Image 1 (cartoon, rainbow, N blue to C red):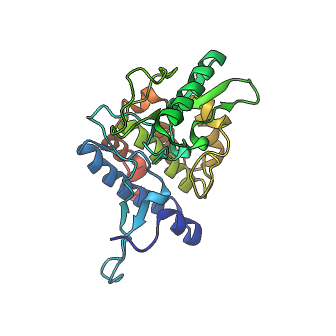
Image 2 (image 1 turned 135 degrees about the horizontal axis):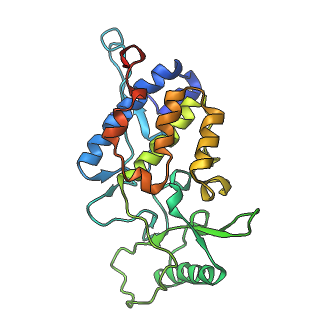
Image 3 (image 1 turned 60 degrees about the horizontal axis):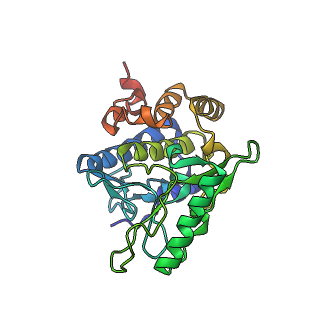
Length: 272
């Protein structure tokens, strides 16, 4: 039962008491996500909005605030060959584009864009739905002229019979739901908390969808270092955030347990 608000509201109304409190809060988040991963569940939508504070009856007995991870509406079973970017049968989505990791954005050619647009046109025609355009509309990079799309796919409810092959094949490979997705999202939370409230990506506060795509579609290790070193002063925080906001391949080689062993999550007086 969580009725004391979320981490977003807490942070922007009360602030945090330096890196020490950020470390204490995010360690609780990491422990909760690790439990999910141990059970084969990927949260898929981890953000400051999905971290809520438990009410405390007696603050004298329990001075430390208890934080829990909530809102599993966009979660996946990692062992069931689930893919990120699923568009529900009614055309809606349970994820926020502002939380999607860089591997979810695909650069497509003009011919591939035509195939892509035809896919979603067919989805709307055959299944009589309206797909969320803020999610599936292509993005054109103003600097390079390249076109990018989110690696989405439609998931029908199975009751409407449609001939096999009625939908064109998507011009990209889908991204499996893995723990690395939650690591990226955890990195976004840490970046905001450690930078004094600056989000890495500009998003719509209500929907959580991206307002601009130029940073995410051009994300690489150099971009990560530039952003982290510019906006985060603490060197230990810099190091753990760079691990979490690293490439898809690098994130797939770590897990939440190894992240929790990072010196950032060890109280300053106990670090060796």
